[in-house]
Image 1 (cartoon, rainbow, N blue to C red):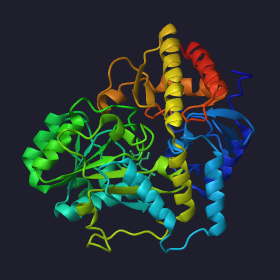
Image 2: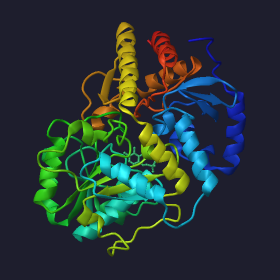
Image 3: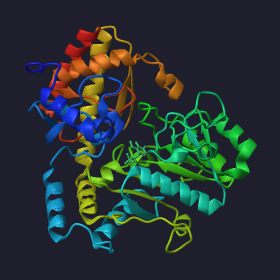
Amino acid sequence: AAQPFPADAPASAALLERARAVVPGGVNSPVRAYGSVGGTPRFIARGEGPYVVDADGRRYVDLVCSWGPMILGHGHPQVREAVAGAAAEGFSFGMPTEREVLLAEEIVSRVEPVERVRLVSSGTEATMSAIRLARGYTGRSVVVKFAGCYHGHVDALLASAGSGVATFGLPDSPGVPASAAAETIVLPYNDLAAVERAFAERGSEIAAVITEAAPGNMGVVPPAPGFTEGLRRITAEHGALLVSDEVMTGFRASAAGWLGLEGVPASGAPDLFTFGKVMGGGFPAAAFGGRADVMAMLAPEGPVYQAGTLSGNPVAAAAGLATLRACTPEVYARLDVVADALTAAVTESFGRHGIAHRVQRVGSMFSVFFREGEVRDYDDARQQDAERFGRFFHAMLRRGVHLPPSCYEVWFVSAAHDDAAVEATVRAIEESAAEIA
Ligand code: PMP
């Protein structure tokens, strides 16, 4: 890496102080605050391809990529043009537009089991609405989720509870009513026997199982062979729906998300899917969709209410559509090349310097656990050296590479990460590994 940056960031520090006076914690989403790594969160002035530039004018290789959406890098020309074109025609109408049809068609054409889709504005809204729909469709109220899977800040889905089999959820956050958490069963990921037991006990009350298609919110933890298939089989046997959350994996893990990599399970496809991030191209657009007969329960066709003033917003839809259309096979090939280079660098440098590590990956989505051995669930993921990750994060930051500020997150790459950005990152990994060894 070029001249390392100093550890302090005066312009960001000044902005953080002002922000704290008017915004809780100075940030609009908690993980931005560098809570687990310490130090001053960098305030970003602009993005350029694979880089972000902070308020002090320092340029970093961006491995946050807005937590997933910026799969093409910052300021992609086709997306900029589409956004400018849409904005010139109007910002929002609250009446239907052609772009919403085009975006829905694009999603339906890519993800085969998705027959109907509704657009919303965030991943949280997508999962919240999918859960309501599943409850409305089945007439049941209990939802099964897996520890370590994040589905947005939906009351019923914030419960994550401790380890153990068929743990009944306790609220993870004040403000989530115990009654909401009581309708949630939290199970260990990759443990089909636990799912069997929960259904044996309460199968007739369970509306849905929701799972990250391939979890990326406890670090990357791929479903064990047969896990997704088992979920589909068990839910079908008990008349419950299976909701596959592809907010992170959708259009990133492959052109058709995780489903495109794993294929439709032999036991059948999930009933509902949720999407976000890439399909909004950096704007607030997300979606849920699936079986036509289930989606037909939604208002105005059916009785399950769901709505949004800005749903299908024309500028956001234009950005999402342009992004998906620009996601060519070459883009996915480039993401793989970048992920190959960075995972190889971590393996080599951490190995050379004797740093315990484990790299896990689905498609171009990967994360680095600061521990040895396979990570199969949240309990495994939590057994890592978070303090050492914090030192690594700051060593990388001083060398001009911005990692996600938590050891539980995917290192997001983009097709704009060119050889120069990759080489700078590889050098920073080697130097930072030497520093923290
Ligand atoms: N589901 C998954 C799998 C996610 O990764 C996220 C966000 N990280 C969400 C849902 C929530 O999306 P949003 O932040 O847009 O509400």
